[in-house]
Length: 149
Image (cartoon, rainbow, N blue to C red; front, side):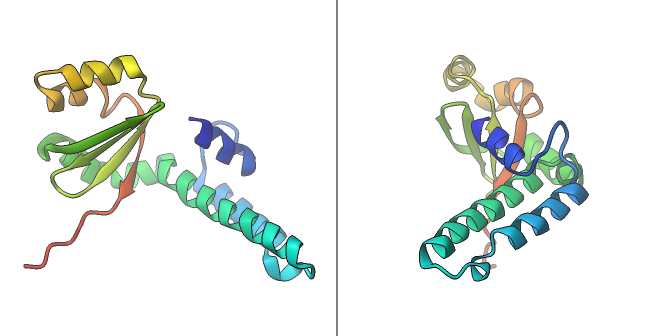
C-alpha cells in the first residue's frame, strides 16, 4: 500500500486512476527528468534515477488501473476459478500467489491474520476464492510462461 500511495503522489493521482491522465502526466515527468537535459554528471545520474522511478510507477499504476483490470477480467476470472495455487509468498501486506497456469498475481492489503487463516486452511484455494481473490486490490505481476509444444 505504501508503494501505491508513493506512486500516486508522484503522479498527483487522487482517487481512481485514469489511464489517459496517467499517460499525460507520465510524458510530462519523463520530459522533466530526462537525463539528456542536464549537463553535470551528478545531475544526469539523479535524473536517470528519477526517470527510472517514473517509468516503474507508470507501469505499476497502469497495472492496477480500473480500465486495465476490466480488460483483463475474463483472463483473471478463468485463472481464479480453474487454475490451482502453485505457490505463494507474503511480506508485509503483500500476498503474491502463483497459479498452475503460470500467472502470478499480487494482492495488496492482506494482513498477517488473514494470511495465517489462508495458510492454515485445509482448502486454500476455496479460502482464497472466498476471502482474497475479489476482496483486495490486485495486479498481474508476471506473464504466463509459454510452453514449447
